[in-house]
Amino acid sequence: MNSNNTSKRNTDVSSSHSAIIAGIGLIFMAILAPIANFSILQNLIVQNDAGNTFSNIAASEGLFRLAILFFLIVAILDIIVAWALYVFLKPVNKSLSLLTAWVRVVYAAILAVVLIFLLDVLQLLHGAEYLTSFTTAQIQTQVLLSINTFNLGWGFGLIIFGFHLLLLGYLVFKAGYMPKILGILLILASLGYMIDGAGKVLFADYNLNLSVFTFIGEIILIFWLLIKGWKTEAVNQSK
Image (cartoon, rainbow, N blue to C red):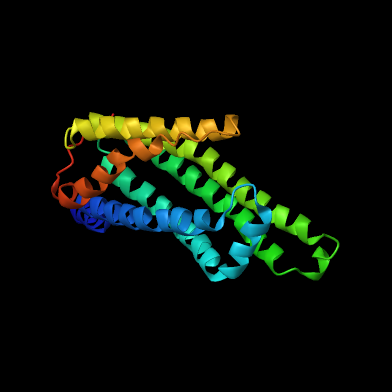
């Protein structure tokens, strides 16, 4: 009986290992997502100019494909990070930690699904035979529409992500082995994402981007997990 319990403990992922996994996953996401979105996708888009947007993407198709791949990797990493944070925070409240993880998985699924609209752009670029019934202007307009739909869908997903950060911030705040200020900063970050996401869905000309100013808690979480988190002994507080 004791040997079975020991074997189970040895095969389970430890709190320290989960902190490292989450930290590394978050670092790669923090690198890949801005490259995919700001360095590639947003640089190719000319707002309200379908012709130039189409030309930019056609001239940089390799970069466009790379952005899609980076977004997909980010979605996969979100699932891994959700699991690792669940393991790390389940001593605080197992059921709430599980809910927090599932909310992040839902967000990752939304991101993966809306990537279909970017894949649709690739089909439009190559002018398959069934597209001959469309004029060049119509195809170019559809390209810009697909990209805008991706951005809108991702914005909707960020509302879900903000809810995840709200739950995560609460768990961090309640954890006796993590700094309370970090929990507060994550809650502030969640409000930024939820307001921005809701703003993009509700208002066509929304451009506040509060999350650019409130995301600091996410960055601090990465460094805390990698510097202190893996040394922290989680106290069993689960209810």
